[in-house]
Amino acid sequence: MTLAVTWVQTTPIEALRDASARPWYPPWRAWPSPALTVAVVPGEAATREALDREETRQAMIALLRRFADFGLSWYGGELAKITVTTEQVSEAFLRALPASKAFPKVSPDGEGGLMMVWEGAGNPFLLTINDLHLHGVIAARTPHAEYIDGVPLDSAQVIPDKILIAIPAR
Amino acid sequence: MPIVEPIPDEDAIHRQIDFPRMYNDAKEMIWQNVFLFPQGEPESVVWGKYAPTADDVHRSGCNREATTRKRNPDMRYVGFISSTAGTVRAIRTRPGHGFSVVHEPTEGIHHAMVSYLSAAGTALKPSEKSELKFALSQAFGALVPHSCE
Image (tube, rainbow over all chains, first blue to last red; front, side, top):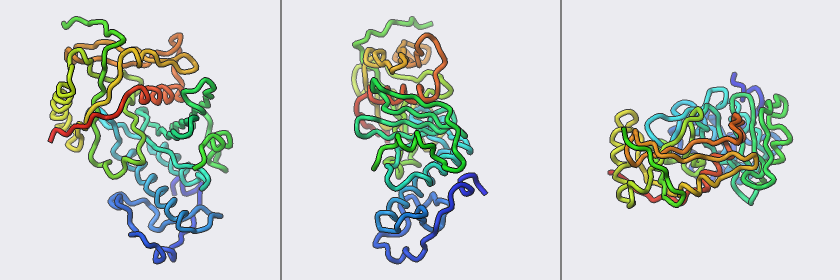
């Protein structure tokens, strides 16, 4: 069982597949996530919007696996991978991200970690997940930038409060 | 041994961009972390003095793609982004970190390097590195696209 699975139990909603007006498999189906069914976070209503959000979440998780398996870079032939632990922790992080919060854009950081970037609204939030630790910048590139380094993951909550508060709403 | 020249602040620098085709379907989810500084190593740019037109930069990018594809057949040169040496040198984060831009002609007369420049020579924390990468991405303009095929 992966770290991610031990932290967050999701609820399959197989029955809602037939209600979907959109093709079930997204274009990235060549990169399936381990979840054979879409799930919503426990406690969230299974609306069309929630299903779309879950589809995005699963696509992002599949992308993390590509980063771990193949890597990504923008120069030269050497692709930067994320570590397996970073991938598992990042997956747990994405699964724990509440519906009220925006999804980030993601990228390998070049040193085995994953960068998550929320660019919007004048107070960019940057988060690097490096194995079991989180490193963030609240209000990056502003005079009141605040730096958070070496925050250990909270095994009960996954996303520590200080970081959860810093993540922009969607 | 080629002579190392000073790069004036007003001179253009260009970052050539490669992208593996396997991620074409996921571009919307990917933050363009164009400068990775793997393990803190410098990153390459093209000095505009020796590549004065877009065609010059693209030609160099396509030559590099031909070599890169021998190691990674999926990789494609997709264009370049531009800034000036002075714009990059002027970046300062709140703790005072920034970048140096220097000519490094051992890999070609047009070749220059961007490196982390930490305040007072201190080791950069992960959060500080991520902010520097973010700042650098903002210092460059839009992609001038190109396909070598």
